[in-house]
Structure formats: C-alpha cells, structure tokens
Length: 163
Image (cartoon, rainbow, N blue to C red):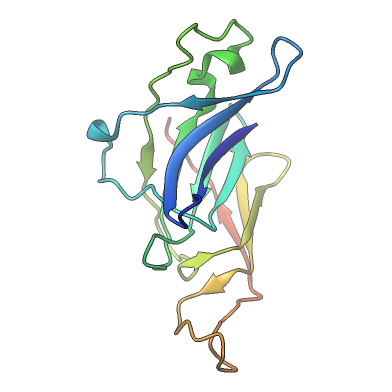
C-alpha cells in the first residue's frame, strides 16, 4: 500500500509518500523520499482530496485534489512504485530511504473541471481512467445552500502513456 499526501496534525497539506511494508510478517510504515529539485513541470504535489489509481505496470496516477489554499487541481502526476525496492520483492534497504521521481503528465483534449474528493479507477484493460463526482470550483461557504458544489458527472478518459 502506498499513501500519498493528505493533511497533517496541524491541518497542513502534505506531500509525503509512505509505504506499508509487510515483507517480514510485521506491519511497518516507512517513509519514501523523493527529490523535489528535479520535478519537470514544477512542483504542485502537496495536496489533499486527490485520487491515486494503481495502473497496469505498477504505476500510481494521481489526479486532482486541492492545495493548502483549497484551490482545486486538474493535473496528472505519475509515480512508478516499481522503483520502491519492496515492490520488487527484495529486501528494503537498511536506511529505508529511496529517492523517487514524480513526473507530471500532459493531458490533451476535453478535461473535467478541476475537482477534489472524487473517485477514480481504471478499467480492467488499464486503457481508460474513470472519474466520478467530487467537489468542483465554487465559493466555499458551507452555511449557504450553494456553498459547496458537488458534481455528479462521470468522465471516461483514454490513457495513452508514453513511458
């Protein structure tokens, strides 16, 4: 299991990656580090309310979510979990530090509105990403009837990844 982002104890938006290691029969969380200096396309990773979908080939596709100022996102990021030693079925390094590289993906064609707290999955072929619902841009005034705007649309996007 890979855990990415969310909110911390101080309600700050996080960008850390954690791996649930069960390789020795015990459950241990280990932080997996990545290099923020070499991210192509800029740093836009800290987020909450995003979807993280496991794709064919052992990659996690992160879509949407929101940043610390509650701005909704519509970007796609890719993390290759095969680069984490435990996913290759070998021993975890003693230091439990692995440098990962995030990669921002380019999306072409029609795009859903920026959103957070939605659901996403791939179909059985791994060719399509299905995105449903979520909170879309709008004023955030929970006391007003229209303060939170949720979307009930279903989107189907074809994944053409040149990896």
